[in-house]
Length: 503
Image (cartoon, rainbow, N blue to C red; front, side, top):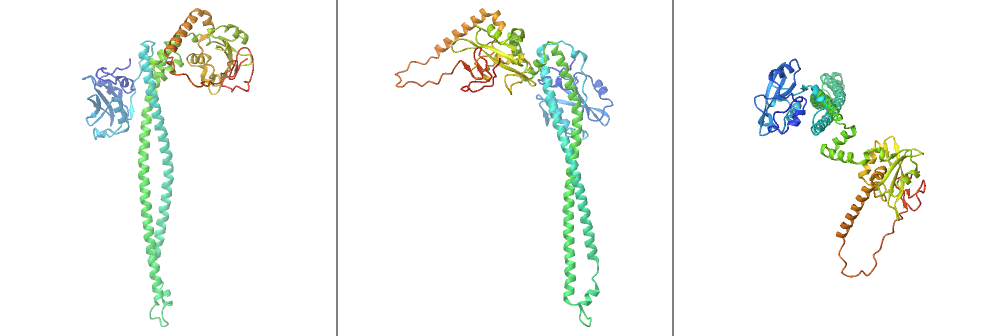
């Protein structure tokens, strides 16, 4: 069985903790030490404190031995010391995965780098349990898995970015080393010139005819040369100092990034078993939910809208006749057959048939100018799915398309088709009296609402007639032809719609 947090009245976050892969529940101190025995430093697990409900104990491997650390529970917050508390145990563990425990104990210069993941018992995969509990656990595990996978992906991307940066910085180090060698060679060469004595012959050539003393110009040249060499030496030494400072800063940066790289590598290694464990749990929940006759589409919808909304949606869809394809899918029916079946049917009655030219056709009873008519339009079958027009050809099956338009008006694609796929044709045939009574009741309610919303009579007559808009030609629908007339293109006076006419 899954470990249970010690009392929901004490720990309001027990569901989150119960799903944490490193939480082992109510096991003894000896069992925890036995589980961790031989594991590398940084390995850890969390268990219930057997002495007091609502408190926990962290067992951590450090220097080859098991360290027991009490997790304090103060005012519904958790931590090792009162100055650093967290809202949940999971939040606390996640913090110390990236931060050393030295803030708690200077001896514990270590992070929680290797969670010891508990194993799932065999009975977890058995098809039992309340559907609501199973579904909510499935949703929580899926959400935790998604967050963990996103976090892992971010860490991987950052790890790769740091590794790429370090490779580039190594090239910078080589450039700095070469530049330093070049400067040192220049300094040595300059020093050698500075140590070279002044040529006495050169001095004599600048002296008097009797050789008593050198001319002032020769002495001045020697002094200028030495001064120039000294200034050059000073510039070279300053350049070397600046270069060494920048090289040292680069080395410090590289050392810091290497530490980040190492930490990320440890975190990635520590996260992988958690992801694997949550994935295994998710797969088991899927297996158990499928034993309740749920399909992949049900599970996907449940994740998107939550269990309660999904249940209402599922019950509505289950009670609708649209889920029974035999009531509306007539593959062998022709256009004439469809019009005969839908004759005198109320607006919204429909069927789907296979076209001779490929794809499918929707035939639906609609309101005309003088009487109800039947319209036909193509349902495209593409690699991306079924639909009336790109880019809406994404329904995985005809059934999914029908279920969508059972509650959504076809007006989404054509503003003249103000109807849903309301009644499958054979459902209408089987329940015509009930449907007619329902329509009559709806009509009476509409009349009552209209009467209640009528404005009061005007105080005085209008001096000019109110202009009216051009009435729409109800004999033609954008891109469609009412009745039995066939055409591949709409009349020039009608703008094309997303629907295509069908034969």
